Length: 146
Image 1 (cartoon, one colour):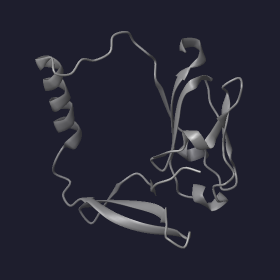
Image 2: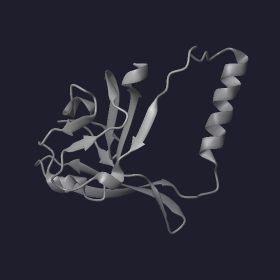
Image 3: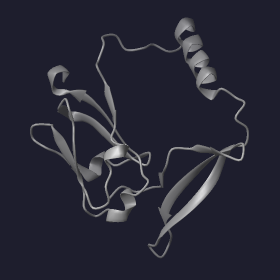
Image 4: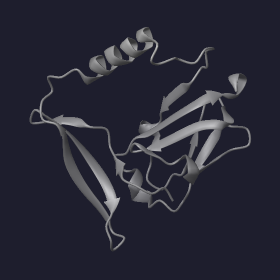
């Protein structure tokens, strides 16, 4: 089973950007907590980061890889169902070229990709109610390009 904190997509509550996360305490119990990420919605962090990356590229300090790869990103959050561990992919994923994130935690090592790449199964070690109000994002290269 993956180690670390599992968290949900941040949201704005009372003018603050907050994020709910779950972790196991020292007794092994699943605990839910909330943390404040940003206490103002004013900064445009995406724009600031984008500007910094472009500055590094233009100065030559950062070199982007050549050749295009069609990385596909699927948001399967609406498909999550308590007790369901297998999810479909269309198009199929190339073996070894997939990353799976449950509540932001990379759980790829806790999944099995079907031989044909059309589905993956999350280990049943995860409690079925863990999927309630969760996010499931899959980043992968389709078979045709892998």
